[in-house]
Image (cartoon, rainbow, N blue to C red; front, side, top):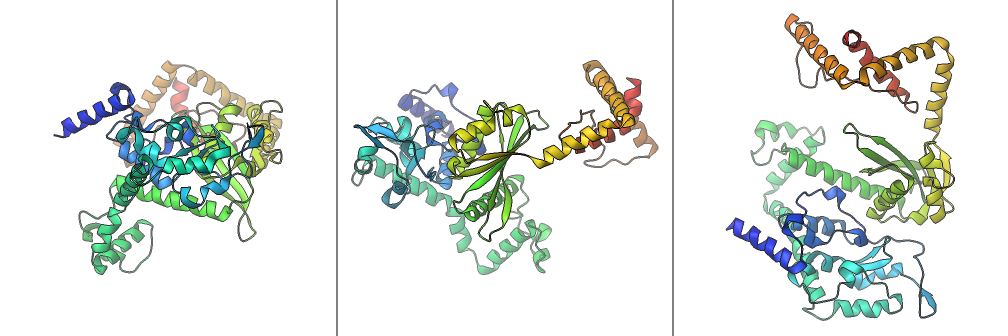
Length: 442
């Protein structure tokens, strides 16, 4: 029966939207789902088995409603017209979305449900192409909503049903006795390291087997929920005011380029604070790619780029370039977003430059660099180094000089130090000392 339903859903999706079942998106990565409605993948392109998870994600996030000081003007009937943020309020607040990328509005509920359940019934203005006739916007919004049992009304009700279904866990908890709810709260507090005196009575072996909160998936859900609440508090503390951005990019352990974004602003208590917002993968570190990633991340939290009043980066050309650097591209949109070279990077560069002025230090790091070039420049030498280290570690285990244990004796490499991170020099030297005898043999 389940196979039949999956097959039916696949055929329904492909027939209603002309999507090849073999090209459907099967992998679900909620963090990578696009917030801007003008850049989203059509809901019909997702595998039917994960569509509801995608829908729940967008329903939880709510409609994309970036509140900007001014929106791009468009000439309509010899007059300049533009989107008004007041339209986000009132009867359209729960479904109206605005795309910064396309300067158009969309309907969240119709995007989520129309193609699967009501395909071919209404236009695609509010789901795919976007609507931007600003001179008759309110009239067209009312026409789109229609009467009771209109396509929009049915999609909106389906969105409400799915959001209510998501709250069913809370309904179940409410039916529990007060004693069970108190025990559940204590287990949750224990997960956060709380020192409640009675926690030991309801956790670990004393907890019900179906409510231990030790499942990795449950712990990830709790961590994600905490992250969302933390970000919500940060955005609330910003309170729609002006802010500066601090950006840096680097490769992670899998050699993927990652960009970190930090907001610097004055909070409600009049204090200057810096708050980490997110870490996102970027295809490359060109200025255009970084700008696109920054704007996308700001859009997720309904923050307008026009509110940027400061930029802090390192001194790389893609960051501070006068022609096509990131700071120049952002200042074209926000002339008041002044750039300041990161003081931490300046300090690192100064420290490295001064250290190299000492002849013995410079000579020492030249020798280290030569070893890195010789050993790291050949896959054969790397394999020899790895094999020798494994044999040496096995001998130490047999002699009892070192003990086995989880997380101990991780494989070490000869990573090149970076001039903007003095800590990388320490890590390189620490690894170099440990594997020196093996490196000298290769």
